[in-house]
Structure formats: C-alpha cells, structure tokens
Image (cartoon, rainbow, N blue to C red):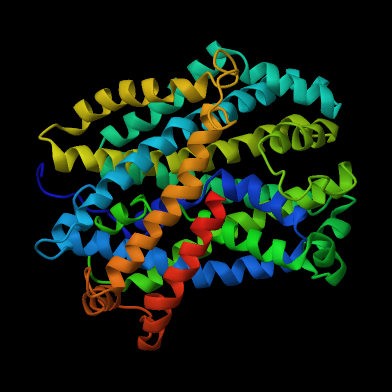
Length: 457
C-alpha cells in the first residue's frame, strides 16, 4: 500500500460525498418517470419500503467492510477474510464494475454538459415539437466530435479533482457541488409547484390511487419498485465502501447509512416535485409507458416543457446544471474509488495515477462514445455498447456484488456476523438490532438472488 490512508476532514464531507456517489441520473430523471409509469404515489410508498428492506442493509455491509479493512474493494476482502478463503476474488468484480460503469456513465454526463451549453446559448429554445427535439437529440449524440470532447472534459475535470487529494480535492469540491445541487433542486421544485397544473401533478404523485396501481399492475409495480430501490444507491461494487475506509470509528455506521439513504431519497422525491407539476402543466401528464423509461424523456419531453415556459432558458439551464452536478458527483466518487485501487496496488502518486487513468478511461469509453455514431450498427445481443455496459453493471455486477457483501458479512464462512455486528455498532448513534440477523442472513440473500435472476432474464 502507498503511504498513510487519508481521512475526511469532516463528517459532513463523508455524508455529502457518499450521498453524491449514490445520487445519480437514476434519481433525478428515472425515478420520477418510472413513478409515473407505475401508478404514482403507491409506487413511491412501495419503493420507500424496499429502500429500507434492501438498500439499507447492503449499504451497512459495504460501509462496515470498508471501515474495518481501511481499504478499497481492491484489497478489503484480502484483509478481512480467513486464511485459505477466496473472498478476495471479489476485487475483480468490483474493479471491473467501477471501470465498466465509467465507460458509459462519463458519456452520459457529457450529454448533460452538452445540453447545459445548449440552454445557456439559447438555440434549443426555438424547438417546440417532441419529434423535432428527438431528432435534435439524435443528431447531437450522433456527432462523434461533440460527444468525444464533452466526455473528455468530464473525465479530465473529475480526475483532476481526485488528483488534488481526498480533502483538498474530492471533499472540498464535492461538498460545494452537493450543496449547490440541493439549493438548485429546492428552487426548481418550489418554482414548478407554483405552475398552473401543479395541483393535478402533485395529486398523482403524492395521493395513492387504487385505480392507478390497477392500471399499472400490482406485481409489475412491486417488481419495478424493488429494482429501483436496489439500484439507486450504487451499492455492490465498493463505490460506497471506499468512503467507509476514510472515516473514524466515533460514529455507528447504521446512522450514517440512514443519513446517506435519506439524502439520496430526498433528491429522488424532490425531482418528482419538479417533473410532475411541469408535465401536468405543459404536457397533459406523464406519457411514458411502463418499461420504456430512457434518457429520451429528459431530452425530448422535459426539453419541450422548458421551451414552453416563459423563463425556459433560465429554468432549462438550471435544471441541466442540477443534472450535471448529480452526474459529476457520481463520477468523482467512482474515480476516487479507482484512485484508491491504484494507491493500494502500486507505488504511484495521485497525479501520476490520474494521468494514466484519464487516458485509460477515455480509451475504454470510446465504444460508448461512438455507439450512437461510428459504431451505431454494431450490436451485441441486440444492444449497443453503451446499453450493454449499462445493463451489465445494473443487472449483473450490482446485485451479484451486493449478494457477496451480505453473505460475507453474515456467514461463518466469510467475515462472520459477530465481527460485522461489532463493526457496524461501534461508535455513537443508532444500533443495528440483534433480531435482524435472521433476515440479513437468510431472507435478504434470497431476495437479492431473486432480483439478480429477474434482472438477467
């Protein structure tokens, strides 16, 4: 390992950066639209229940492994496993998952940067029809030069931040960005709640309707809520766990996990307060169908809404700035995880690691960058490179990694329940109750395995 491990300067830094890792594009546009597709308020209630039942225990396990080992996923299982065990093979899944996620996520973050520039310039405001906006989005993503430049800017800026160090770079800059993100979303939510159709939108979003959930299908809704709750937190490949390795033992990890999940949920719920009032005012409600949620909604329907508003240029610019902050917070967090891999496995310093990985991640991202242009005709299992990379992370690596974390922490063939229980409860704050052991040891692994199988199918 290279040198003494850095620590966060403050608890606020840890919470905001960990939340920033969890808060991503799935929160700020996928959550509202999947909520609209699956019945509104009842979906939100089911989602919140699964967030507590699934997401919170896995996050506790990942944080505990990180803090106990004082390592990233590259070496954490090596430190905690018993002699002769093979849990350290998990490092390959985690390292691959972080790189694979960034191979497509940096490109999507580049799209957000591009559209922020479009709204600041104001040219896109002249386009009002959904079909024309869809064509404009297709033309934008089909331009290999624009996509390459935007992605490269995202990669170089985020690795430059990580190269400055944990406290001077990642913590200092991410704290400011996350605070601005919270200010922006509150402002946009308050503004949208004053629109003429806000009442109908909020009723759909916040008042449970048996009719809405019947139309969506109860079991389909439960399945969708389970999947969204599980994938929204970025758990299962060490991206959260590395931040556990940067904190002390003065506070219990359950309380920290609850705070991170709460911040993540706050952003998702507030995003709904933007999308539903706007859609019911300017778009006659949500038109996405169940199972068809994708990025096109963001660049067509929402762009159409912004272009119809009197202050569309300002609101559109602020919205895409908010979206960009959400994307960059995840990129910086995952890049910090990648930085940790290299610091633990090599003798290189942060700046050298950053330079190597700027080149490496850019090269690895080229298939996703060109998946809508030069490589648009290349399909694997009927999917473009970007879709395949995203599906592999979401449907395979996250649930499989989460399953491994839970079994490792609760089984006597892994780290073991007693050691996990001691670590999670060390420090001030709420304690994990003893009665939860049967659930985490036997029920939760079955649920995650079920999610894994369903996701792959």
